[in-house]
Length: 270
Ligand code: HEC
Ligand code: HEC
Image 1 (tube, helix red, strand yellow):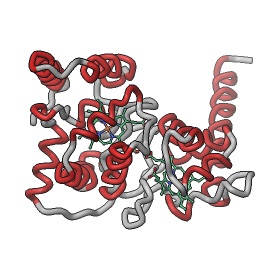
Image 2: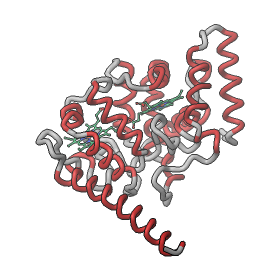
Image 3: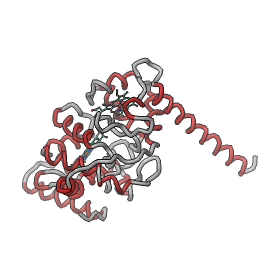
Image 4: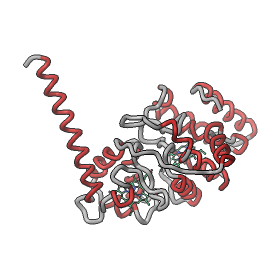
């Protein structure tokens, strides 16, 4: 077999494989899984994964497949509580969870339209991009990517384009102890430090103007702009140190310096 034929065969085999996975995923979205409890996702998340702001159904489109799979697993294990999602997650088989996650990760519905007062949006933007270090709150973009587009991999989801009502609900879930699946309590410590006003402002920002920069983006996972952000392990390691550091005045200063240096290295200009 000459090289060109071999190459053609490889391309056919690979694309048939992923097309089959996408078809299997779409079937689950439209008709549900093989167990009766695995109801069709389309009712709540839509065929394009846009979700529904009024009902609190999250947008799944564009979140990485590995993140979505981890969340389904968390509902199954009970480290994330939801009366709606837990029985559905338990009824999905492992391969169904994988193919449906793969399907939603590749969808590109239009960004939601939201409105909020300019003052609130400005406060949300400030918090998202520079944090509130005096109160122990790092900038959201340090972990969620410079434009809130998430970091490729299983741990740091996109926030840009997510519904404000869902963001508010999840932060409340961390405060109440209903969501406990975040690595080394990274999100729990952030959630606990946020005031209700801050939560609402930052949620409005990510759902509104904060998602604009994502328009027109294509690709399986929203790409991180530089290597540093791609390295989940590295980011997680430094943030672990950042969060487990004792909150003495000295360490607060160290945390702040560390965060600001990181921000600078990412060329973020608040
Ligand atoms: C009856 C409505 C409903 C149906 C049907 C449904 N979901 Fe959900 N889903 C929800 C709600 C509500 C939440 C948010 C729950 C919470 O607060 O944690 C959610 C959350 C999720 C999340 C977590 C998203 C994130 O950003 O962390 C995933 C993943 C998910 N659903 C996948 C699915 C899949 C796959 C199906 C189909 C097999 C499905 N859902 C069917 C209502 C539904
Ligand atoms: C120190 C790192 C870190 C910082 C800073 C951070 N987060 Fe997170 N966040 C995480 C991790 C890790 C997860 C994923 C948890 C999981 O795996 O379930 C997460 C998940 C979330 C989710 C759930 C998304 C979904 O689809 O279910 C929301 C909402 C969220 N963060 C909001 C924020 C906001 C708002 C800020 C800024 C005020 C912020 N985060 C700052 C680490 C961080």
